[in-house]
Amino acid sequence: MMNIHRDSFLYECLQIGALCLVWYSASAAGNVIVKELLNEFPFPLTVTLVQLLSIWILCIPLIHFWKVPPPEYLYQNRVYYFKIIIPLAIGKFLSQLSSHVSLWKVPVSFAHTVKATMPLFTIVLSRLILHEKQTAPVYISLIPVMIGVIIATVTELSFNMIGFISALLSTFGFSLQNIYSKKSLKDIAIHQFILLSLLAKIGCCLFMPFWFFYDGIDIYYNEKYHQYKTAIRIIAYLVIDGILHFLHNVVAFTMISLVSPLSYSIANSSKRIVVIGTSLIVLQNPVTFSNVVGMSLAAFGVMLYNKAKYDQRRTQHKETILPLVRAEPTLNSLINSLTHDEHQSPHSGTEVLSRHHSLSHEIRPSIYHEIQTFKNV
Image (cartoon, rainbow, N blue to C red; front, side):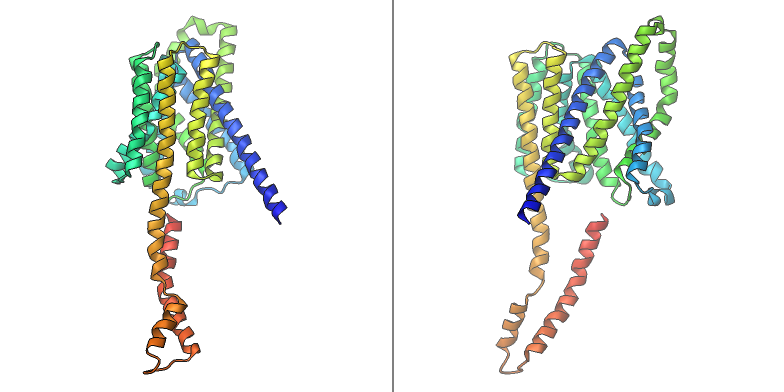
């Protein structure tokens, strides 16, 4: 039996390790390719649309392969398309577009360092929208993040204000999208691959007319992109980037379903470090020692934030479960209370057991209701 558990644990570790390797590789390679592509082909709107189109097309065989059930609740309540799905699709598209503008204007390493401010946006927006309060360690963990980002910004040799603001807008958009999903998608039973496909499809359909008038006409009349070799190289970059972006999203969703929130947050923070390091080695953009210190301090602050949030969730979970455990009377407490009145009205063991079971049945429906409610949410 111990060998079976050990083999199962070893298999799970190998599986997660392989997924992290694919996840990190796809993200690092995708960021490097996008940077090279935007240097030669400065149309971030086109890059964003190609990525969404790739997700939409490649999700079709994936959904059939996994035999994902259709979202019946969503089909029966079309109003949710306008209340939830369409706003999410617009937010995802604009955040992704801002991210590409930042990669176009500033180095990959600096853009991802600025994105380390996502915990700050998440806390502020959670307070304003969900009225959530955080513990002191969570707030303290933001200090190294902010100091690191400030140091990296001040010492960045290739600083660009448009790229910096775009990175902040992208981080703000993704934070708002995550919170909006948490607030609005409670009652929708929809698989993550279906949701990913829907957001990509709606984003493509909504912004295709803007692309035609904004990028499409410029690309058509630019003689540079009519050259055969240049056109083939750009198309190859776009196809590879679309596949890598699709792979990155699928593996990220799979990781969420396999590991705990803390493990996923740590893996995501480690992925950001890998992306920054890979871009520095491959693209060889100039950095100073102070710049590296700022990046490292921001990444360390994100790790502290993940640990503080995990401890906060564990404390809240214990405070929620403990009253339910204390509320249920035990058999020993009932016997002791009944023994106290034994001389006045003696009861047999059978009567004690029957009273205990009757009280348990009176209390358990409320506990069962709580479990059902939590499961539905």
